[in-house]
Image 1 (cartoon, helix red, strand yellow):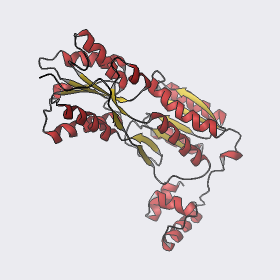
Image 2 (cartoon, one colour):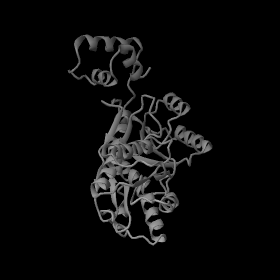
Image 3 (cartoon, helix red, strand yellow):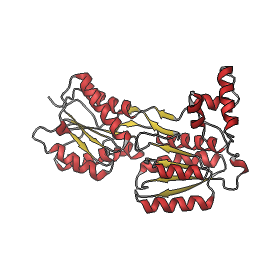
Length: 331
């Protein structure tokens, strides 16, 4: 019996159950009694504090470890883990079922204090196995809409996508291309929705020929940037849903003999360190990747200590960082 089960049976929110468990006074007396009765009836017990455990380890699981995006997440997790005297075991499952099973076998053997999964589809069988092991989990940038009582950490992707396009619209662009991430990934869809909302709000042209689906990599940015610039009516600006793809668009523009931002404006998303040093420095939407990793690590360590979060869904703010890859379109 989890606190989410208790919350459903009591007809209250999960944070309310959390406040009762933590002895908070901001809960109505009748509600407190109802929740406490259910906790007692079902024999709910907190996890033992991780300080009493022999592991002092947390697992950090990526689908891939081939980008600076992953490094920034890792940096935030490692800082919190180090300060807490906890080690971090880093794994990459490469979207393969056997790798995930191999990781599960490893996590059973080392008695980890919990797991942070990055950009993952939290499969029911994985959720069931972690629950069987009594192991807490947190998901960073969930691939799909979360359906379990698992805390998730993300960024304001819709607002970030909208701010990127609003910046280009303010400069005078009206024909704006977009290269999204994979459509199966929630953050990709949110950024695309932000793009569409900004165009619709401004009454600007929405042309499906200008919408291309990439995979966040430099290569897909180059391939789709080349396709966009090869159109009969190419865009005057491109919003790429990752910095890596934006830099791929840089290469596509160079091969078309175009200069950035004189002939083409480009906006990325992430604000990786390389965005500041690319020629020209990239205008991009900053999502606080290291802070997302740190927030996830703190949440996981709290769960391992038997504490429950006030909210299962946390989104950290994004904001646009204007550099030198955007300018007004040529007349």
